[in-house]
Length: 334
Image (cartoon, rainbow, N blue to C red; front, side, top):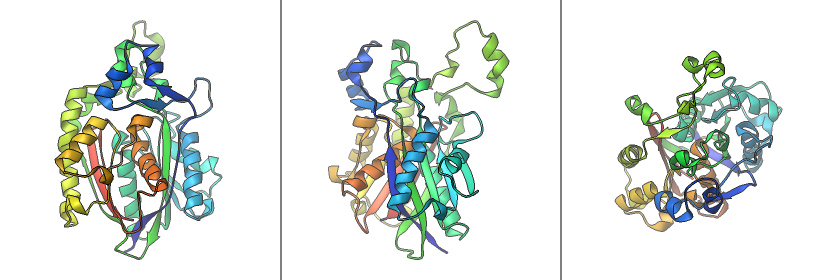
């Protein structure tokens, strides 16, 4: 059986930076209020009227990752695209990447696991490579949140959190079973789906209902029970981290770098303290990008790698928790 390793990384975010001060001009909030609750100072939002989308950002990140892997687009055997904000209700963004990058007629799979999307996508790609079906898989996480947020005081509890951006990696076959992805662990608990949700669009809120609606319908904006999500996140993060450590018979001290999903800096800090991880063992960048959902881990991993914080033979732990609820972890040796 083969192993899979990350051979190339890339990320892309829009040029438009939106600070907390910028948000305070359009809603009742402040830099202090946002930082205290989330740790976020700024985020990148696609400019209104721009042609950028989840797919176009994903394509830009993908081109960087493929080049850094030392490969050509024709070397890619399969595409996995994770997002909660696809360009269309259907088809998914995966086929758009195939067209935008002028690739062969390879398969494309779309993952809809929100904040856990990249972890799920990485685990899925790993299985395809382990069985020998594919050699090089392009894995993308990309989100265009800003156009679907309630940018008023009513929606500030959610809208200040999210940013736009994309990250990508190339997952490649290796015969070295000591390198690459060592294990992945995926979970879900659907009974809490309504605690973090966008209820519409859906088949029950389909076109006739949209056209005939005379009342303001908040179901099209994200809803989050923040306190409930926080409490569940810290429990599930801890469980899935312990699962990865236990399966691989290692302890927290053996982790060279832990990259959590960038949901909220306070969650990351709680987990760091619980596992007694040093600052140099944890990488967070939510301060500058906000929560980019399926893109957050791969953006952070790419940035950490670019800064030299990920080195040969390092043990890297990725973990995510989000809507669904879904959660998961991936442990790998660089």
